Amino acid sequence: MIKTLMTLFVVLIFASLAGADIYRYVDENGVVYYTDMKLNRNAVRIIKNEAVVIEKRGALTDASGSKSLNSNSDLSAIVNEKAAKYELDPSLVHAVIKAESNGNQYAVSRKGAMGLMQLMPLTAHELQIGNPFDPEDNIEGGTKYLKYLIEKFNGDLTLALAAYNAGPNRVEQTGSVPKIAETKQYIKKVLSFYKGSQNMPAASKPFVVKKSENIYKVLAEDGTVLFTNSILHKKQAGF
Image 1 (cartoon, rainbow, N blue to C red):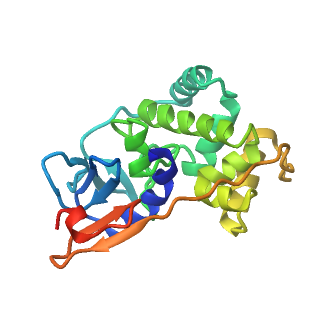
Image 2: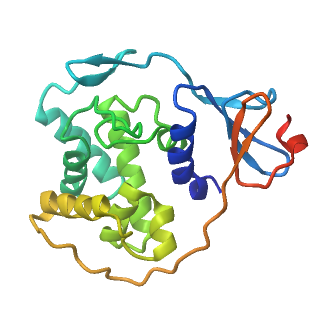
Image 3: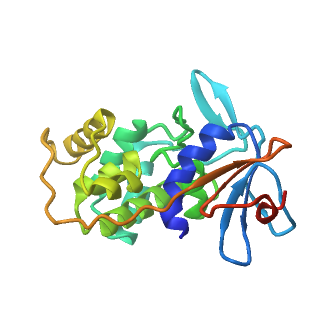
């Protein structure tokens, strides 16, 4: 359930709850809630609203401190280790890093994606990544997620890269690369860095579209915002 909801929550919550603490709660029926207020004692805070980044020379830097890359050899060593762990070509991981952040471990996108492989906050949480600005943690998470997407889309690298950029739900809905100019350009860029090809390969295997799960937004009278995968009554939400 969490994997199905993960990407959509990343976009919705960060757009709606920027600057707020975010809590995750699963009730006795297995319904998952993400909200900006702790609804009960079982809710777990997964994103803390504090100064984790500071502006420096036009970029964003982790204020809590993280290991800095001293050279390209440091990056290659980490990539080789993680690529071997998840059975991926190191050149592919390097290509994604190049396309995502151009090797800037402190990069932060407009949507909140962080670090070398541009992990969204909830993606990093679901992947159990402690510090997305730490090169080893970030590449661990990004490589693991990329491997998951490649397997999810039957080994089709084009669809996996589309999902990495636009989210797996959008790829599932169409069974192909979404008609998004940014996503198409992203795939071309990664493949150019990876193989030097300017052309996207055709999908090599058929992909069966799965039914997407609905996400609901609830706004309480006190201003609390809640996202869940179940139609809620106020009593269910704890309001």
